[in-house]
Length: 490
Ligand code: GLN
Image (cartoon, rainbow, N blue to C red; front, side, top):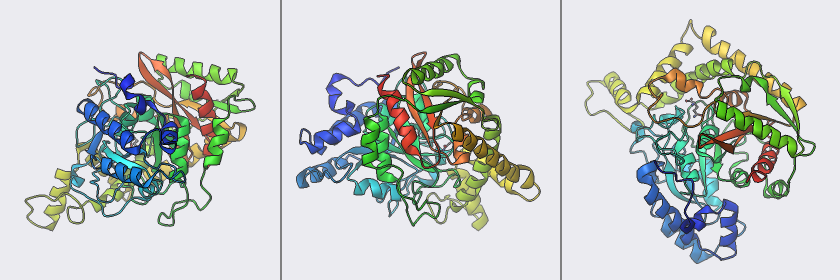
């Protein structure tokens, strides 16, 4: 077992936060080539153990040289900074697999809007991250490219489905990554690997060019090593996009000016933090519960007013509603992978029906097939009212619970995962147990609210994350409280 979350002194450059790396580039203390070269060496040294990337881009070094030649432009917020991107987000000219065999040779000819914004901001993509196939999973074990490993203990899972992104950031392969969160896939791997993950409010970040899983739930967001860095990434990717009809027309949720205000904050005086009672009773591991209590006390010491709140529908009911809705939407979204229009096509087909069946049977993994079957079932005539409509009703109740709690409090503080990272292979054969791992994360996606997962401590030597939940489009609040809690613990 190895621990890649503790970078060795020779990696001093890698240990910088994104903000500090950017400062050094702007002050010409380092070149982009040095940063990219350090990240690529780190990638080559750690990938045999981590498998956090499906595609590594050694050609990024040349891009860095070009940037150095033309000079760092301080108006570009990420100019010369090496980042990685989850393989569910399409990248022009760079293979994009969504963790699936069915897309093993898919090279998109356009960039997702978030990638376009990253590139416009000057970021350099050094790799595409491993993930559960089509983002379906909580451990990255459902990847067709082998599981990713947790950098804090390589015998454990990194969480999922953005496990590759979290592992990559926590192991210093890059300064930031983009993930997607349909039911917890940014926040949970961030918590299990010991980094920061932000799921923005539904509608604040464009999904144009993001391979869809559950369209009423999916959001793109950053994974970073500091809360402040997550804010920088969010300021780059958030904002209206006419190419995504669900994108909100309001202004970006956070600007660089907001981030300066947030960074100067050192206490929580006047902040009302709600603790959802139900989250602390649902099978929480003792070590994780202890970190929750410590974080709460810590927030109180920093001046916050702590209140207990109740979210009666946001745990068990949320899991049931989430899996009905997510699978229903997935079954529809994945119908485009037919062996004709995209990706993998079977070698031997007798007729057109056989071509569809064989291509999908050979191209999709077991979990994806299970979800397509269940999703098609809950949408079928006669079952729609019993399952899908019911789930949609429960969804509304959950959102109402949250909005009521957030009327009394500025933010809510809750655990992200009931347990720390578990051993690879230990529950992958038990899908229901795996689904229950999402008990504290899926309710936010059902409600569309923003959530920030940040490292809050360790239990049994493994990272424990806590999440801050905010009002719609008030990412500033969770970033600000998260920044204070994070910096005062260091
Ligand atoms: N683990 C959840 C699922 O399998 C969430 C995944 C995600 O957020 N993409 O559906």
